[in-house]
Length: 286
Image 1 (cartoon, one colour):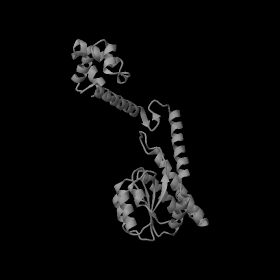
Image 2 (tube, rainbow, N blue to C red; image 1 turned 90 degrees about the vertical axis):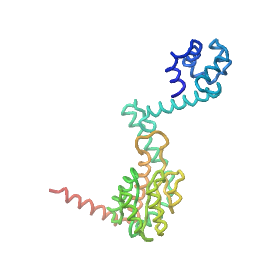
Image 3 (cartoon, one colour; image 1 turned 45 degrees about the vertical axis):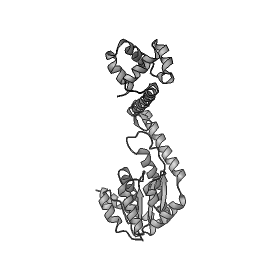
Image 4 (cartoon, helix red, strand yellow; image 1 turned 120 degrees about the horizontal axis):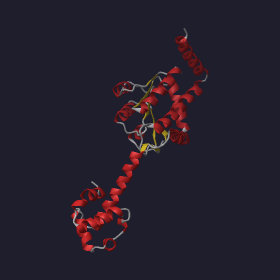
C-alpha cells in the first residue's frame, strides 16, 4: 500500500494533531517532496518534532526516507495509470477508430522505413544466392515470427524451392538435426532469446549449416550464433497488445528476400508463379 492510500484509509484513526498533518499532506502531496520537515511544520502550524513523530508512526526512520517513498509511489502510480490508459504502444483506450488507424499507420511506416534503412544488402544478396543453390531450406520462428516464417516459406515454395516452416518446435528440431552443409537455416526471432530457436540455430551451426538470422538490433544469443544477420527495427519498448511493428519489420525483410529470389531466377520464377496460379484456377473452375 502506498503512502497516500495509507493516509486516506487511516486518517480517522489519527489524533487531532496527526489528522491535521495527514490532511495537509493529502491536499499538497505534489509539493511535499520539495519541502523540509521544518518548512512543512511552519506551513501546517505544528512543531517540527510533531512532523518527525508522525512520520515515524507511519514506519519511516525520518522525513527524508518518507519523501523518497512518496516519490517512488508517485512514479509507480504514473506508470500504472499510463499502462491502464494504453491499449498498444501509443494507442490509448480513448482514441477513436480514426486516431487508432493513424497511429497504426505511423507505427508501421516507421518500422518499414527504419528496417529498410538498416538492411545489409550484401548479406541479403549472399542469402538469396545461397537459397537458390541450397538443397533444402528450413525457416523457423515462434509465435508471430512463425507466421512470418510460414508466409515466406509459402512464397518460396511457389518458386519451386524446397522449403519447410514447421511451427511445432519439436518438429523444427527434428528437421534441423538432419540438415547438411548444402542446406540452409533461416531463424526469425525479434528478441533472439527463445531457447528453442537458439537451440535449432546452434545445432545447425554445429553441423556446418549456414545460419541466417532475421532479428532486432538488441544483443541476443541468436545474434551471437548466426553466421549472418538481417536486422529488423521496430518500436517494441512501450506497452503492446501484439507484436504489430516487429511483424511489419519482419515482413519487410521476408518480402525483400522473396523479391530477391524472383530477381535472381528470372523467367523460371515467372513460370512457377503462373503454373501455381493456373492450378488454383483449375480448382475454382466449375
